[in-house]
Length: 234
Image (cartoon, rainbow, N blue to C red):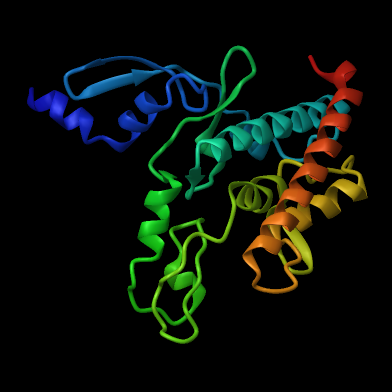
């Protein structure tokens, strides 16, 4: 009984159980006492990160197809109000059917839980003091406490850390999934806008509309590109 109680307090296990029908997390195979097992997933992001700049069209086609799969996953997460607050290459996997899923849920939270954590009222000096790893929030300029909900989106962080890569304001240092010699300038521009949306003011409704617009344009562009590269996918 003690082992079962321990499982019920395991964040990853509970998230996997609660969303088992959504196919957004690695499938739960079974449990024994305090231990549980999930399906084994390939992790192509780690492989692509370590393979260097493979300039073949086959590699480019695989990258675009994977990016489209990640966008589909993000759409499902957004529908379920789930935030990925710790975005890493190793946290994404692909099953035998080509479905992109999350394989590490330690930093994956329901939006209401993440919002409660960032709006805890703790003292702050700058916005990053209120962040929950990759989930960004705002330090109140008047009260200097963290009293705001999450202001970043899943796609925004994925565009920045996965699609774009490690960069400075003027150049890309470590290319991301979609940064290759084959990447059209239009895609690069959309990924940059996705990572750093051009917000003209603090109006939350206007910000949300800008994010939706950029997300749709990126989704449409990558889907069209993915279809055009189908012949290069093995």
